[in-house]
Length: 125
Image (cartoon, rainbow, N blue to C red; front, side, top):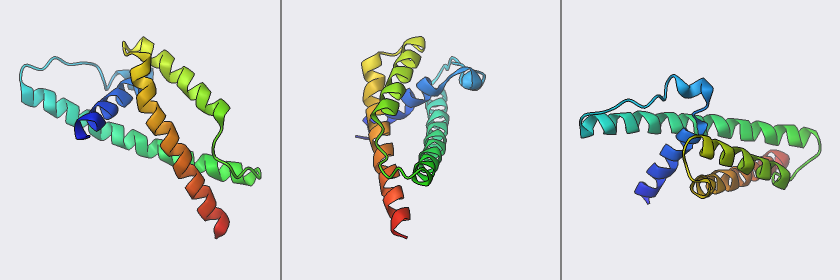
């Protein structure tokens, strides 16, 4: 399971590595295993920070939806748009679409679930 999660984390960063991140995430050749592990650890830390930031925006989306009297987090059109976007990013970054889609299935599903729980909790207060 941990090995799978590390793959998810690494792949998520590669997908997020758009122009704004390109300067930080340029591949550097390592001559030893410790160098490789240090690079992976640094990337893992950044991925967790990015996922945390993403989740803050998910909660903000929930707030905005509730202000507009929408109380269901699941938006199939938006989810479809996300998958089209990440598949394009995957191709641009040399990854298989299905591999990235598996990762984002988890991210999107959990985001929807967490957003709904957040909205339900806020409504009940």
